[in-house]
Amino acid sequence: MKRAALALAEEISSHKGENTVLIDLTGKSSWTDYFLISTVNSLGHLKGMVRNVKERLAELGVELLQRHKRIGEDGWELIDCGFLVIHLMTKEMRDFYDLERLWFEGDVIFRE
Image (cartoon, rainbow, N blue to C red; front, side, top):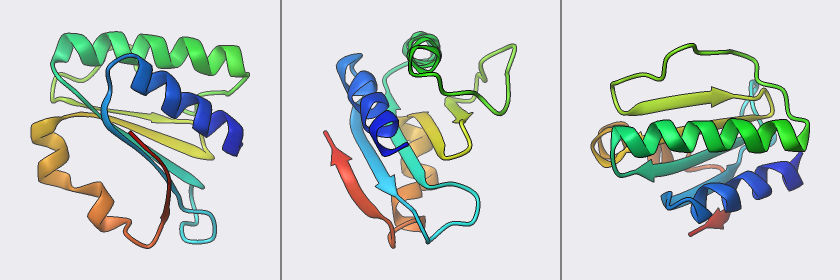
């Protein structure tokens, strides 16, 4: 699971995800082991990133727990894989919700 989470963090960074952070929440959260958070620069970038992430998840054999037919227009897309929750957000959404501050007890295992 950790290997898949790290591979996805690298994938997102390689597709121009900004300030990509992978937080290990093992033993600190009852519903997931990892949060992966990255900033996108536009809604178009968000849509492309979601498509790339879903393709990479399939390659890694990771199953999605929810399926959206339409990507949200609010600037935040959450992709739930059970052990890993991916948050792709515009800078405005990321600054507003400040997930890293909320989950400060987790260990950052990837940052780029």
